[in-house]
Every structure is written in C-alpha cells, then in structure tokens.
Image (tube, rainbow, N blue to C red):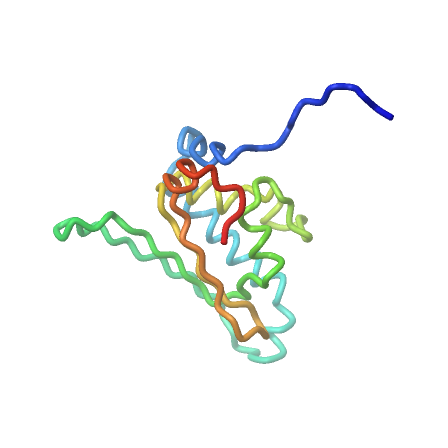
Length: 154
C-alpha cells in the first residue's frame, strides 16, 4: 500500500476568471471561434461535398454595441459548419481537453473557453451537430460558477 502524501493538480473553477488576465485582442479572441468553424468544416468536408457539392462555409459575426436599453454589449458568432456532437460538446468546456483530432486548427483544447472568458463573464454556446436532431445550449455565467464553486455544468 502506498501511503505517500499527494498534491492535487486539479484545475479549479477560478481558472475561468484568470482567462481575462491573459494578453489578448478582440480580433484574436474572435479568430478562435472562426478556427473552430473552419476545423468543423474540415472534419466534415466529405459529408458536405457528398450532400451538397456547392456548399460553402459561412461564418457570421454580429456586433451589438447598443447600450441605450441597458443591455450588455454582445458579439454573436454563427456558422454553418458541422457543429458539436454530444462528446465534443462535453469536452468543449473542459480546460485543456485536447480534441480527438488535434492535427488541425484545434490543437490545444483551450481556444473557445479562453476566448469567450476573455471577451466577457457571460457567454453561451448553441450548437447542433450533423445527423443529430437535438440542439445543445449552455449559458456560462462566470459569477455563478465562482460563487457556487461549480465543478460540473448542467
């Protein structure tokens, strides 16, 4: 039996609060989402070409800086790529969980979380994957995660 003391190397939820301290720019943060869309397209290129030979990936970025009605500033990034299936959606929120295919644009498993948390304390992900009939959604609220020491997202 091994009775040696141990030291935890688990990454705490406060790591999400530290992302805002990283040196970054808005354009680099947004580029992370574009990378995700492009990699999703690359992962599913055969499907797109076989079902719609004229398919073109489209990434849309909308900025809403209207604060007249006390709404927060908002950036919406959407695409028509392959989306996240259930397994990928679960991994998407785990810190440094390297994707199964890390030979392309998504190599470290840090981009979406780091970029979203750098841009703001409240962000959401909505996705539907190819050949699936469900839409997945999660709204991440940093203050709620910190206040409640959330370790698993519902």
